[in-house]
Structures are given as structure tokens and as C-alpha cells.
Image 1: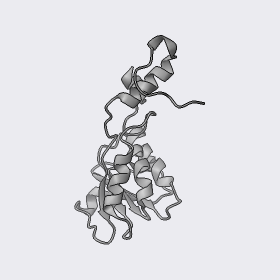
Image 2 (image 1 turned 135 degrees about the vertical axis):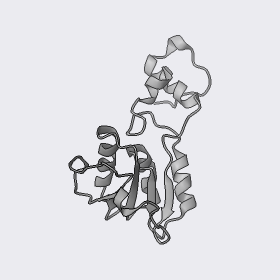
Image 3 (image 1 turned 60 degrees about the horizontal axis):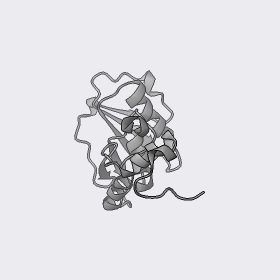
Image 4 (image 1 turned 90 degrees about the horizontal axis):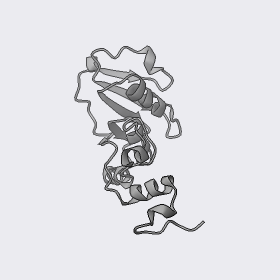
Length: 160
């Protein structure tokens, strides 16, 4: 399969999906969300304990009361344990949580793009992780073709 050529493509020669894809490549993009990054060794929560809910990674967020909660902390006990991504998605999309969702634990810069897509607003990086590398990871993918927890409408619908 040949790569898609750059520049204008005659409208009649392409099916709709490919035209939309070409528009996506040429359109100005927006960041899906912004993550605030912290280092684990220097992080101190700003909010009072009464406004913070810490969920274990095996807890169902639908079973928790979010009344009066401004921050939900989701735990990554190991880098390879991704259950907190599902919890963040549930909080944002199904429960409509508007407060901050913070990732804590074994959080690496490799996880940041997916965190931005699943609804996290803060990430407390492991002490050996570089904040500037984390910021570049987030900026690397300015937009995505599929919908996600932050932007539910797929990109091709927005551009049509």
C-alpha cells in the first residue's frame, strides 16, 4: 500500500473516509486535554483530605459517593497495571465527574498520552521520571482520530 500523498487530492477520486483523513492531516489540531505534572518526591496535595477520595485500583468508582469530592486519586501500583485508566474513564464519561483525577504510584512518562485521553487531569510521576520529558510526551499527540473520555466525538465527525 502506497502512503497517502501530501497536498490537494481531487475530491472525486477518493472515498469519503480518505478525504476526511486528509482533512485531519491538514487541519489545525487542538490538545485533547492538559495534564498537570508533579514529581513524587516533592509532591504535596493542595486540597484538604476531606475533599480527596483515594480509590484502590480494584475499586469500582460507581460504588463511591463523589459528593463534596474535588480530587479523586487513582493508584498505579505497578507500571503494567492499567485498571486506573478504566476507573478514570468511568469517572469522566459515565459519572460526569468534573473535578481533578490524579494518577499516583508507579507513574511513568510513557503512560501520559493515554492518561490525557482517559480523563486524568494530574499525574504524580515516579521520582526518577523527568518532567520535561513528560511534557514532550503529552505534546507529541495533539489530537486523535477516535473519540475518548475527554472528547467523545470522533475527529472525523468534527471535521465533516
